[in-house]
Image (tube, rainbow, N blue to C red):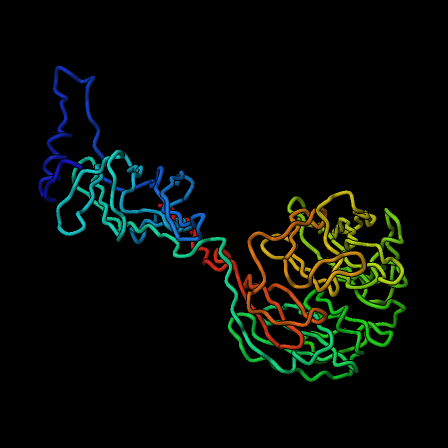
Length: 472
């Protein structure tokens, strides 16, 4: 930026440079001037970024790399004359030397105000600009009559996108005393259903900012095993207790919907609730009035009988279909040689008159299997299935609560989760614990015996979405 001038000087310069050369003898060559002024686009080029790493000796170190920032969209608010990026640039980006491409309507002249004075400088697409603080960029119409000043702000994240932070939410003696538990998220609340050995108890907390857990009084006494099948379907909780399908909108007032021979609910998808009955999978869409047996494409002996989880995830290619994943363990007494959990899956289409697909057995074709762990807990997080478990069962020698396993293909292939590890200071029974995620993108782990409740989130999943679109 070599040319420096005052506001009056630029106006004069524009008027002089745009004086028409048209005369009576030469009507072919002319210059058209316009009386409007606006910036129409703002894009970035290649930027520098400072990265942090550790040396081979474990000491902190940094290095500089570059990346193409042209994909970061900048919003131009023509009403308030503000230009900003809805998605902040990655942490460590150097915004003191930015080369950007700015275009104006009808080729209006663009100038940039100095950071420490009223001096204006011509904008050049090859010169770097310091955006470490908000900058004023103005555009002048080609007739020199109109100008518009914009405030440009470039946001940079202060956190590493894929960094995960755990915090100890609470230590609760009531949760510590439970002999089994399952966590379920609904709306703004997180619920823990657990057993004291005689019945199922219910505890709740505000998932976003709560720290105090409350025990909820239930209108009926739920069976001790009812917590295992606790499922959220169409905004209500369902479970099976003493041979009855039970329903509650608030986890406190429960009603019987139908009697059933099913032993526990597996999960829900759309209008269907799935349950298991003597190794058979059943489905109901009328709250248990009628049940339909599901078909299996695989060996029925490979169905799980304990530590069962069913996860429902929407298909990205079809809004009226979900993918169901069923995982758990076979009997430790009958199948002592198993080293991996058994996994099944199916596509569940929810539109009227849809075809009912069979459940498919995944088998052990992949070397990347889910270990056969006691009290297996599976949930979805960041579009990924993640699982934790206690000590290995039978021939599986996995040490309990040491790793998180993840699957990005609905349970076919499992690997240790690279983005998240368990809290270093977590203390828990390896037989009693629960894990789930909520709508605020928090991941929760509730620990038996210690009563610790851990809560964490990937940084980028907590960032606000400010990517609004403005037009003229």
